[in-house]
Length: 132
Image (cartoon, rainbow, N blue to C red; front, side, top):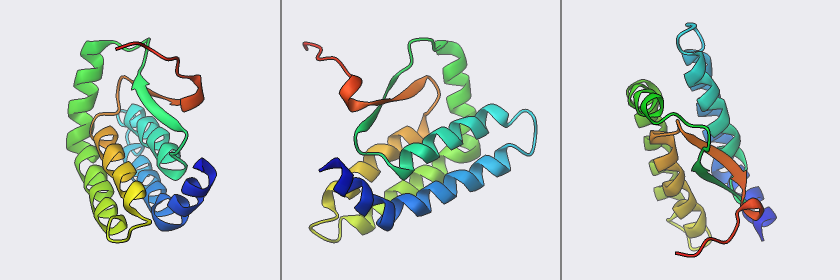
C-alpha cells in the first residue's frame, strides 16, 4: 500500500514539492552561513519526494539550544513558505476522495517544514513499539 501511495504522491505533489525544496537549498547555499539550512532543505526534499513508510522523530544527538536557534532562523528564511506550499498542496489533494490521505500527509509535512532542526527521518519499520 505504501508503494501505491508513494507513486500517487510523487505524481501529484512530491515532485513539485521536492523541486521547491531543491530551489530553497540552492538559495540557502549561496552563502556559507546558509549551508546547514541547505542541508535541512535537501533532507526534507527527499522526505517530500517519497514520504510514506518514513517518519520524523527527534534526533538522539540534537542540541536543544542550537535546534531552537536553527528552527527560528529556518522559519524566517524558508520554513514558512515551504509550509505554505505543503498547506496549498494538502488542500488541493483533499478535493478528491483518493487524495484525502495524501492531503493529510501533506499537512503533517507542513509541520516538519516549519521546524526541521533536531529531527531525523527514519523508516517506519525501524520504530520500536513504545507503551504510552
